[in-house]
Length: 334
Image (cartoon, rainbow, N blue to C red; front, top):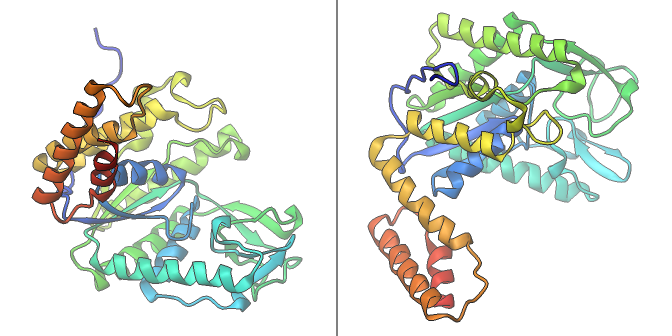
């Protein structure tokens, strides 16, 4: 008996290998994919601007990385005792403006260097909604009507919210993709839509927002932009399609759901030999995280010795991967 609708996932023109570099940017679902890949020792850089939901914010971040933009104190604003930047997540905010700028500019410099060498960029689009500053928010050189990435808990009267048009998003994303391939012609662009529901916008409004993202991707493909679409949204909403696979807030996919999506991503987008290696590394990582009740038993010490040997073998066979944490841990414990 068939328990869910079948979904066909196409593979990209060239699948990911362990030697590849992968930059990820976008919504909080980007963090799940990035963490899953990083935990398996893939070379990733995720969200150098922090979590971003809107297409406008993601495109602004890409333009910053491409131009290696240098932010100054004029790009910051002071609110509730903290220096913030409209284009960045609050993880970059600080009570000291110089420290905030240092974090921002170091992250952009790293992203610029990484992007030039990247084989893949994964963009997870979260929302078609954008926020514009009103004339009431005359801070950091921003004018009324300018788009921002993060509201930083500023007064609601400082913003207006609207849906971006499909035409606007196609033009902006298309421009970013063109610029990406100018500085890195071999980079492959992967795009996905976040399955996280933006219920604060309203259920109907969230569906309209997601629909515009899908249409934007479709139009980019029809215009011949070299992008690969991975159906993360469909895997959660159409395949799992049950609130058991959502967190207690009924908005964010839970651990089981994100693990399922990562598993499907690996099967569809990672080449065979790297996928086999990833499965072996996953076993080592599981052993690394295991904390036994009784450390001094002969059985546990034998287990640690076996894991130490496996970690050193991996490090020797794959010198471009870093197993130093595992080698150190199993060596010290055994």
